[in-house]
Image 1: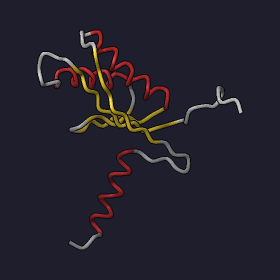
Image 2: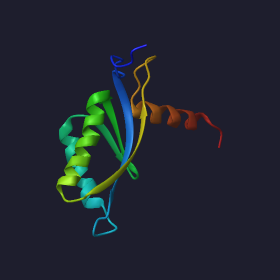
Image 3: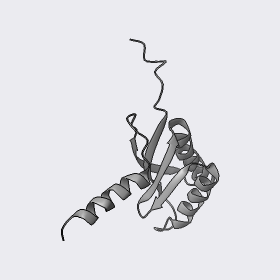
Length: 113
């Protein structure tokens, strides 16, 4: 089988944690704020959390934004960046990250304490 023409999934959710390496300070909040500005301007749906950001949208666009975050920080002089990415896709239904959290909250509300 020729896999070269196999398409990517239409949509995905990607949770990523970008880690600048070799910065002058242990704090990277300024760089993360810059990345959040980029994400905001990208138009991709996102949720920032304490250990990263969840992006939702078309597969290629989501991955492009992560790559642009790398380029943005490289342009600031950061020569090495490590990023952990967890990507999910599904074809049986449309479900947002917020839907997933709300489902668990709903189940927690039904559980006896």
